Image (cartoon, rainbow, N blue to C red; front, side, top):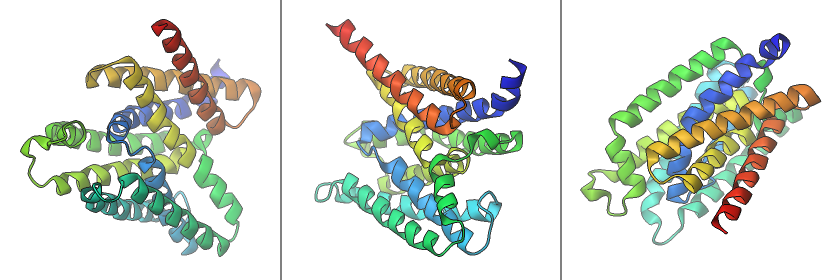
Length: 270
């Protein structure tokens, strides 16, 4: 037990911190019907860190992180500006285009970089086992600031997502940009720790379970947090016992847990 805690203690805390903020954003994302915005912003942020890597900055350094945040903010600006075009072009189409272009640009950039294959692997699956207490605390601090912003302006953000007429909300495009900007910062910080795939699964799966099992947003958050923590815990335990890649194992556990809950809910309805 002590050996497991020594190896998996900080990774488990990191997963809990990520679930805490991503379950909230996931509820917004699912309600808006922009399922792949997280994956798209994560890829844009990854493109930013790739550009920094080409300039000779280390992937886990502050400059690479700032490049990622800058690119994510640019992507958020594009999504906010194009939301008003939904009656002509579905926003999912814009999100898909941004994802495809960012991915292609990253491939072109990595082709010029030494150890490009290792760089792509790092961006996809991260390195959750090597996370340190300092990384977790810094990330938690960033998330706390963003959570405070969303708490202070919760009426505006909830109106954007859950109310079609937005109740006369002034400057909706600005609030959309603030939503995507804060989301972009969260995604960039998360990708740095666990990679693109795990960020996406932590965003979508706990929120999906929450929306299947609860109606009010407060209860949905609690369900999402509990589910996400238990799935991450199971994934890390299995990874330790079976000596499998931690990030990929956690992602698989989230999928299996979601399938089990789906089957149970279907049987209960029958």
